[in-house]
Image 1 (tube, rainbow, N blue to C red):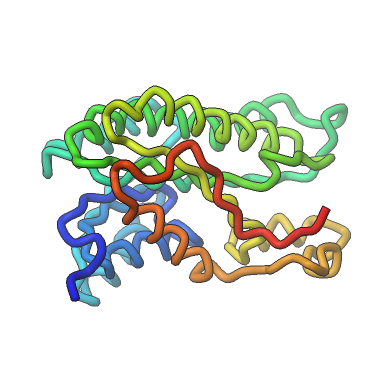
Image 2 (tube, rainbow, N blue to C red):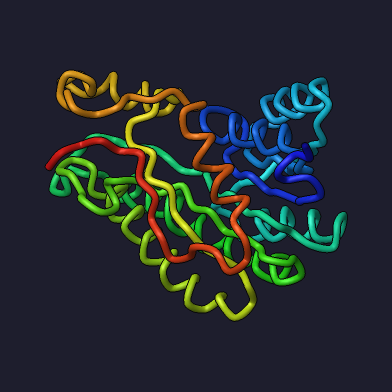
Length: 248
């Protein structure tokens, strides 16, 4: 049986660690040629070496997703190498810092918006010309339940992810005529390095505060990521897929 992503060209941002790293490896295992993007060259090289040692195809491009020139360089590099991009998995983000709005630092609040929302806009904008050249291109955003139900002391992250959800819907409407689907994944709590650091700053343990929630490993998100990457051009778009179990 052929791999489900054989011949596909995928870009995964935030691919140096956590969910992005596992998604990049999973897409390569399914036959995609994966471009791994993040700021840390050493970690990117490690991911690509692992993919290649397992028989997969991968390159890395050091990228700052908050910098327009850096993002444009990433997607132009991939487009130049392959003439198209089939999948743009826009995973980079994070920085959930517990602070109320009244006590927040302006610079930090705005940088959180840049990392989680402006980066999604930049990556989408520069990916689109190359996605149009594919047969059924796909943009997949890493969203968050906090973008649908914001929580106190996480206003910047919640507002940014809410913007990602609206961006998903608007882009889906703008790109449907080109056969490009745009969807969002809301994985819920996942034990990534960034999440573990954020949870350590909270007074209440995440698992004890959300007794009905599924606290996941990065690998638990992979089946949904593959599902969305393998849907047909006429498949779902403008959708938010949640792995959360929380009962409100």
